Length: 345
Image 1 (cartoon, rainbow, N blue to C red):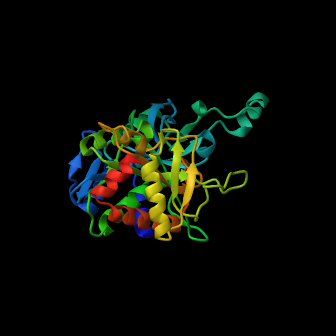
Image 2: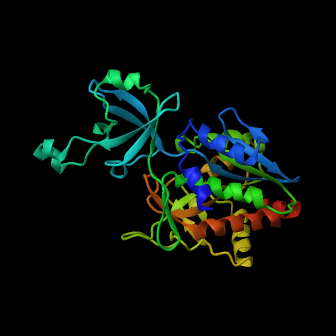
Image 3: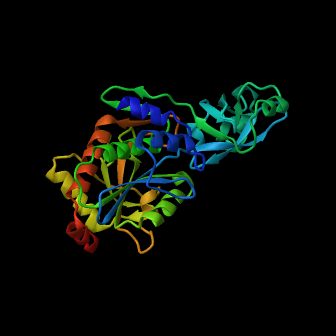
């Protein structure tokens, strides 16, 4: 488990540059049954009504925006990057030829700031990356160009009480979960589509295109959810180790009630811990899958995660294992009659 999660999280892949992750999945699972023109892939098992599970392969990051004359690198965020999460952290710059240069996220040193500057929040537009270069010419000679990918450095670390800290858990943990579901699912009476999407962090693009090809009858997105069991946080429905989050609402989707209640019942019947959750921010692939062609009853299942969109997020291994079991039990329980009943609500 840890080995696979580490392999996935240490791959680099921001929206539109997910090739490392897609190649990893093809190596592990074989050639996909469906692939869209943006790069999302889909694996099919079984026959019958179509049930789609999706997790996104991309992570938040940046691209090179400009290079100063003295060799510092300015950047454009890709996805929701928060300035308090990045200053003083290390990042990788990946060139077109796949050469990787580590760089420190920096700002004008405290000693050089005016009294006025010291009293204000640091604007991210003034941040820059220091990779040790002495000039613009040296940066260009190294092969770094405008548009090159920038990703966090954050090696996987095992913490106390079954916690894991790493970069890119959003949403490589979802990718790991669906990989395991696909590999370990038993006999099914539906057509299971396991989709690995691109560009979720930049407009949910991959989910829109691949779900158009799949035309699901039911759809579930597996992504990181709010982990607010920290000082000052709201623990209700947002606690690490308390089970997968079955969301009634997020900023992009009101969960289909028939599908949500069916999944809740599957968890209860199988003694799988779960949390009923509501999130008033953020969207997932479920928002786009719900709009596929004639529409698909959709749901977001979350893995409670602390410190999302930073160099290190934190999850609980038990939530991962329980989510895998919940999804396997859910899919194995379905047949045409039950899917029709779910759709009717």
